[in-house]
Amino acid sequence: MLSRRTSHGVAADTLGLPSGGRSQQPTRRQWLAAAGGGFGGVALTAWLAREASAAGQDVVPGLHHPARVKRVIQLFMNGGASPMDTFDYKPALEKYHGQMLGPKEKPEGFTGAAGAVMQSPFSFQQYGETGRWVSSVFPHQAKMVDQLTFLMAMTTKSNVHGPASYMMNTGFILPGFPCMGAWISYALGSVRDELPAFVVLPDPGGLPYNQKGNFSAGFLPAQYQGTLLDVHRAEVVPYLQAPQESGFATGVSDQATRRLLADLNARHAAAHPTDSQLESQIAAGELAARMQLAAPGAFDLADETSATLQAYGMEQPSTADFGKRCLIARRLIERGTRFVQVWSGPQGAVNNWDNHGSIPAELPPMALSVDQPIAALVSDLRQRGLLEDTLVVWTTEFGRTPFAQGGVGRDHNRGTFVTWLVGAGVKPGMAYGESDELGYQAAVDKTDCHDLHATILHLLGIDHQKLVVRTGGIDRRLTDVHGHVIRPILHG
Image (cartoon, rainbow, N blue to C red):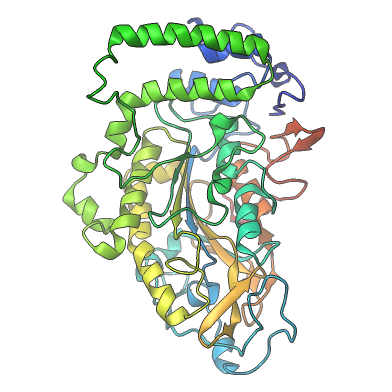
């Protein structure tokens, strides 16, 4: 069992960590783990992963089963992307357009009363050998439907952005729980050590609903929270190198500083043996030292061809931002980052997928901004052979109603929405689940975030029921007490 306990629970030796360890001298983090008896500073599987990678092994000892996936890119459409205007074609909306078929009383979480049935303002067409219906707002993704695996009946617990966003990211509707990226980095670490295991590339317009709560490590050590990077800054990682005006920051002074810090850290560890914050700070410092060499190359696009930049849409204002972040996501995962989350849209009432006012006016620019970059990312990963062990997940926090709101908008709807996956371990060209005639509720083969999380962990070689941390007297996991691996969409 990958049972990992917090400082409130069982010691790290329940993991079966070899007593011999590596031959080199332990880092300060490892010394503190032994002295302080906290989290151990090292995730068992992360330690084993590095050992296996150094030995050229493909299967990491300590996982519950062989992994099909090494890394994950999650594309999150913030605000609630409308399924019946993108991937879930519903001819019945044309048939019943204008009729009052919605709930008579305003459901909890709706921002207004349900209006009349509203047909999609966009045309749909069938694509590929599978004949998948896709809206005209996604012409680029439409061409790759035979590669994608669709979950057509996703559901969630809340019609409200905050709880629903927590749900999709952490498996709970309340704050304080670790997100999926934190759980994955906690269990597996980075593929290599030079970059963070979990990186978040937020929308330049701002953070999503819940702000940094979506990327939180919760009760896990703080080092496993998402590392937020603003790729549009001249210095993507601030203060990675000493500023020119700090002439005193020489090699000699650095050595003296490290000695002083080591002494102070040792004193603090002795006085506060259950404090994980110090371990996290030390881990961050060690990572920063490694990033001084690796990070500049990851964010420097000078070595990308003009054809690649053009494919990602970086020469067009409408797609340049999301295209750049998708390209950097590819560069990060090929350099060792385990989990990258790319967000489309900030919180708020505009410039995201929360289209209450006007589906015809608000949805097309959002779709345009991501469509070409997403298609380019999938194509690029495939051409480079990265899809053989990488999973890309497209999702949102909930769907939208088939009923009009205030004219031509759509309200929140937890009843059904669409997620798709592509890459290692999943069957391409498949659709699992089905919503009802209007696209209001999931009808056949329902799935939810717990099932999605369980499936992603399974592909990474982890049994979601065995990745457990005991905190506050309760055994916690990403999938709570729920979740089933969606086996019909998996190879083998």
